[in-house]
Length: 388
Image (tube, rainbow, N blue to C red):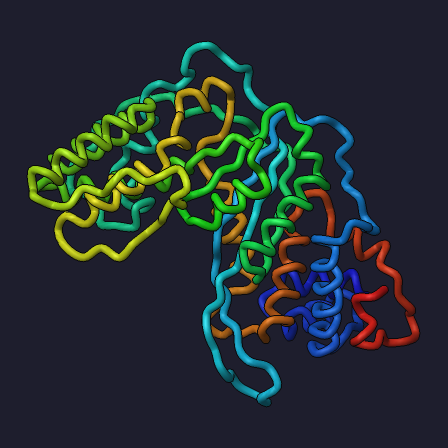
């Protein structure tokens, strides 16, 4: 009953729907409140496992990985203050921390770049505008066959999700990587965007991993810069293609020089070179016609050491964090909605732990529930729920 209840709590949109489905499928079931109570208990137990040196469930992976890929990003969840009766009290958005851990099989390494030309997926104006979250330039894109980059193939993915701050989430990520034997992999990669906490975690817990800036986030800045650079859509699109091709081919320093030169011509301030200790920054509010150019120059300069894309492709490494974005969307399908407010912190943390465990491809949630100690006749005392 508990196993069924937890899988339904992870997959359906509410505890009420979980109770209805459980009754229809099994012919009997639990109330929505009972399912919610169990979710809080099991979620807290899974959270304890994230940092506990002693675990009831060990990893199933017993081989040395070819490629281990770690990526992380932030999400959002609506929370409320508990203990105030029905309704939403103190409702606010909280940032969630999410991380993906992928075991991959790499293509054979080669001496030459296997994909030197910008792939067609980054040359289609509608698709690129969607990535940049901006209006598409009104231009015609002639059909052009360009082979995609065939990066490593995913074999197994697990994930973690939490309300924890980055200083607490970093150890959780390290613990999961150790559990998956990622530090023994032949090649190990850490992919992220420009958020400072991503690279703080990399420096503190994954310094031996190859750091890679997600190419898709670079595309967002290049598209916005091209829009502010040129006076019409035809020239904007041509400018974007030239900038994106240069970054794809590893000529990011040349792009930074072009941006700095254009800013100097306009009489705008050029961002100073960051020191080695400066954390990379991410999106800043744009105010003024030159701001997208300043943002792009700053972003590329801060992440230059993580943008050697030709080398990454030669070594058969991934260069985008698309799987990470997919994981966040899958988490959000359960925890995010206009009608959803989770008690902070216990309720929100519990559902994040349950949902992340259900999305792990190693059958983690079911394995834990099969081994979870309990009594079929006596309800667990709330204060002892996480001690078992």
